[in-house]
Image 1 (cartoon, rainbow, N blue to C red):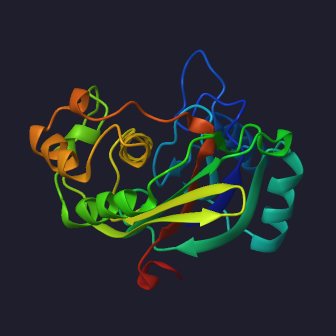
Image 2 (image 1 turned 180 degrees about the vertical axis):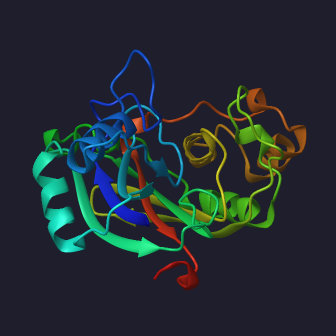
Length: 247
């Protein structure tokens, strides 16, 4: 049988999601704990990668098991062996063909910024103590919403067939001590959200104009866009699937 598990993690001490030979990653830890509980080598597949230091409020994984599982008991046992910075929130049986990465229809990210120094947001928000022109940032968000080719906002060394993404929602919200950037799409390229935030910040401080954003997108060159913001403010916040994959 195949199972989907809803996972949350704080990515501060991990070298991203993807399993690596010489570094501790979230996927590696989960694989080890699944193998321990199922008493056989077990590999999970995630809905997507997150970089070093990036967090997830909801990451979806799938894994296969030969035996029938008592789902409530298995979830309890999985949380008992996972470290404190990784949590399993829910588990559901799915069709054998269901795939955590390829079947996702919508992914959403939040990026958090705080404008006043505070020790309580360390590793979970980006300190950016500068005034922003929110009207210009809103214009930039509208341009992103209308665009589809995001090659200028993708890491150079990435294996993808195309750079097209459909942006469903995008907004920049002000809160009491900073800002929250929210974006959802059918797919994201590697490094795309952090490059988008960095470019919108440059628009907000007047370094770029919304019109220049169009030129950046048209160039299809990562060097044309702004530098990426740090990883600690970024959260994968939700992943959506069609209902018919669940048993």
